Length: 161
Image (tube, rainbow, N blue to C red; front, side, top):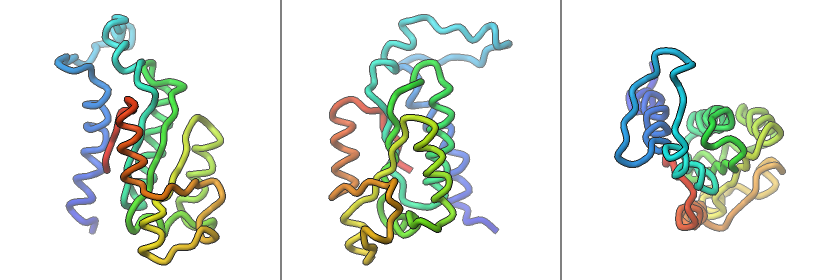
């Protein structure tokens, strides 16, 4: 049986992403048909002006969810082509090895669009994870939290999982 807090997180992820994508103060109803899904330019301007999206993740499940969401964002009108960064902190850095289950998902995501995966160097040091233990596609930053805050400071939309 799945841990209830993890189960809730999987249901909350799409809601958090949608909340971040909504322009402040605007609530939109679901269009009746795809033809009704027309957005006025003012609705997209705030989102389209964001330089990108940064995810801060702490579990292997959230790495996979962020990768899936990054692919979905590339299909969205407002964020298509924007860079997506996935910053992995905490115990999840142990799952960035060449042979780990998330490795192929990371390779596919980075090859298919502007997606970059970063490992928190501080988490790696705390858990005894060496750079050689982490797949070459993953970049290492000294501190994942600082990296995420820097991205937020320059206007990236941010999701903390």
